Length: 190
Image 1 (tube, rainbow, N blue to C red):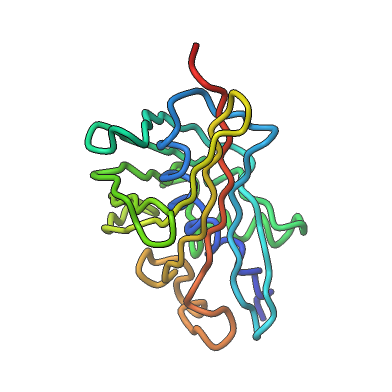
Image 2 (image 1 turned 90 degrees about the vertical axis):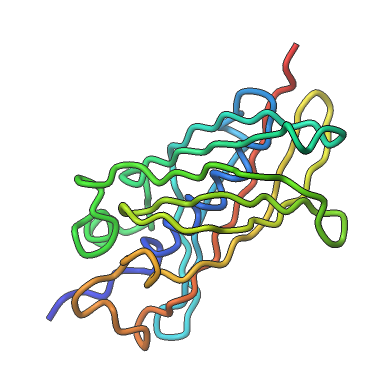
């Protein structure tokens, strides 16, 4: 019997998506020490969270010039960690992220608009495990000293990206919905 991997792998995909969008909104280099991207899924009804340790972003964001603002985020899926070495290794494997064949998850914005409740809706293409889908990421933005801070949660379906193949397609053990949580902090350009 196979060990049930934590939904972190699934969340990783989600995190990649969310992180990509957020990081790209910034007009400066990402402050990795103050930034984070994680994925939260439910395994047998219990929330499980994993984190991506490495990601890059290219963000050009000006709230007064949304039409020319852009964001691109690349996440190293092999950097996903869930806390348990065996589960982390399995999540990076073929049935989950297949990090050897698909080492990066990428979000590329196509438009950024004002959204509801003071948020920004960042539309774009999210590519995970070789599959590209249109997504809209709701994010908050604020200045914090000389930094830009972007935060949000992007819900995705792991099945839409073929995350969890074979016996792991069964969503009764690991839920299909994954919440990608992100906090991207950049230093303002000088």
